[in-house]
Length: 356
Image 1 (cartoon, rainbow, N blue to C red):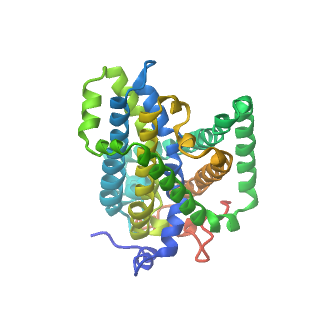
Image 2 (image 1 turned 90 degrees about the horizontal axis):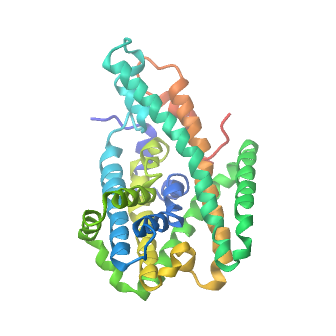
Image 3 (image 1 turned 90 degrees about the vertical axis):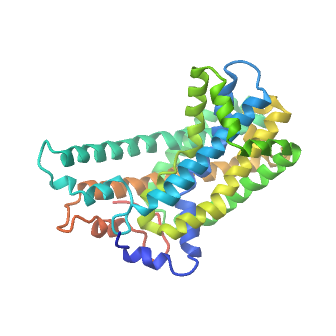
């Protein structure tokens, strides 16, 4: 039976509202900004240059829904969060349980260490891609009302990203304290936009049935189905943060934030976008922003940019955690808990202190 880390026990007494709010800001920033681009890209892949038909939209949104349920809710929230190393999560923490770093060269345990290093390398790669695609998708909303601003989208994205990484070296303790409330407001906006879209075409709710996803994948050419699967996977990127950040907030806050806030808001927004595309296929260029009334487009672009900056900011925190876990000497107990304490958020709530 896994031995809970002291920090884990502290999080699980009563309803951990503060830790849950913190998890919203730190854990779910990446997956929370996926509606900016995930359904749009999956729907474009489904058309394969042809017209966008309702059956394709229903299949795509059903696929995204069940990916969120099976991969994030069942795999991560219910199963993977149970596989901890004294309250710590992540692939490196699991390798510590197998004493992979002390293994003799050529043994299967030594090969597992290579797997752990590859996992850490993939994390760095994901961290390099995520800020760019998220911020770019947020600023693309400028083209909805002002197509003439299209040439400015990429330069503005570069400015935001450069400012983001310059800011990280100055320390962002105060900003870290507001990540949670900002992301809570973001998920509320996602839910409201989704409800607005669903009301326009409530028939989209039939896609709750997984049969629509199966039917779409089976009756399309393999290369189209494969492309749609790859695009739909964008909706679950960032889900691994639930496990990697388990030692920071604990199982209960992470699960509570997912099932009570993040999952309902994401599902409502994806179905709202799908409903919009069923009624107006021309909205495919940017269904997320088209959900909002015209007067809200520019404020929504600004809010989305803030949310994507928060999603991007968390990668510095992950980099610190991975560096400590990989480079720190292994204690005699083979537990990463003493080293994870060095990257655990301080008790004053400043979760995102700048890494040395």
